[in-house]
Image (tube, rainbow, N blue to C red; front, side, top):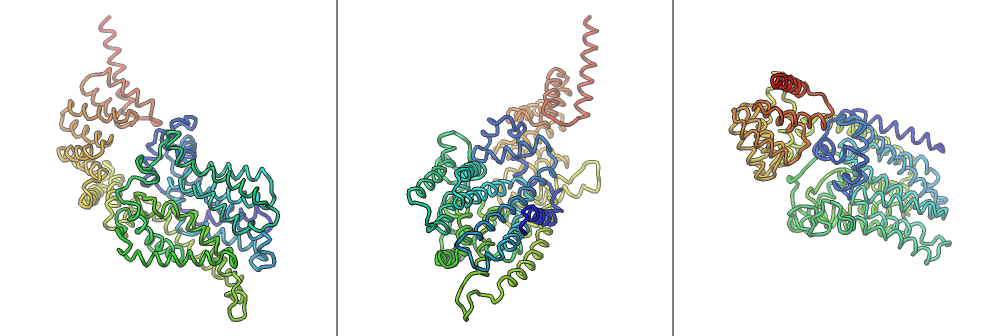
Length: 591
């Protein structure tokens, strides 16, 4: 256990075992807009484009850009990186916990005697917990795992700085803090977390003057304005409401969000112990609390208050419990408090806080309490910890494999969500879209998916008529079913709500099928003006101009298609060859 590379190998083995069936999982939800169809990440050297797309998460999108250059739309390449980050985070967590248990405060305590085995098992729990799947297998939520990487590296080097008093360690703390703050917004709490560690473990170290302590803490807190300042001073993009600081676009006010989050946090805590009925996306099907008395939010408030007070009361007598509890709530402070966000529940928000949960459990098991003549709750705390951990890891590993199986297929994932959140219009819309993706005009066995898709998309619209994605995909279903007038109507509804390249494309194809090339051309050109890099719009423009015998414009759009597409297209190649022959005949005739 003294060999760090052995620990890393063990953690890697644990991670690869539980995520072995995740490497071929498809792109989900935001993966498409953030990666697959995101032209801002096509070139990792075009830093300006990445910055403009999402400056507050510049680092994460730079990582996606590097991934894209290497792997394009091959999902496995992204999964390999995500799993590697997750394993590395488990190793950093091991280093943090092992460093803490090596501090003078723990000298002579049982938890320090077995620090390496405890730290290693804690890291395995962190890696194998099924709640981590949403931040590992859901590719775009690398935001949560990579932000945790830099967050925990800042913690680790802060502990080293306080132990060895080396300026290079403090420089690393600053570097990782700044990088973290350009990865995800919840890392704004890093200085507060480091202050907590300072107060818990180094306040009475007997070698640090208050002048020095205040100086390095002051420097750390200078990083806090980075996240709000990126938008205000550097004119970068963030998802915050431009008229209200720290409020993502949502109609829910701060207090309603806070009352709702009280129940969300209690559900999170339940899932930490018993990861049963996990849900990828509640969306608007999680019960909102407009007052603290609604949905028993006041009871959740009392329970959370008791947990936090318990942590504070252990500030001196059980520092691991205090650290773990406050770590957990500090990790949720941005996304589960007064800063209202569109989605009230997402399991990837627990990625970093889970480490705090594990620390608190260790503190409780090995904590020194005077009960019945014993100093600990358990007569043999190490034995209890080992038995508990083995059972917990085996149970969680099975559930993680099961969750990855569900994530490995779009239909399976969204069917699971619909079952658990039947009034979630986004889930019905995504399930309908997933059925639509399985339809193949050349395979009769897939024809059933059109009817299934239509059913789910209509249900989504019934729940929320403003779901423009459902309207757009329903238009596509009608197009494939030959209901061209219905397709045009749905496309118009989509564009009235939110102009979409996909809706313009559906509309154009419907008009083209009806033989109305003029309106087809108008629709395709509207889509082209919306975004001139979508390959299907460029191909359709080439086709419709070809049918209209406007070979100059046909060639123009087919050439543009070839410039932005990474794949061969026989239709485009054949049409360009025909145009070339026609131009050759025209030239000879003219001569």
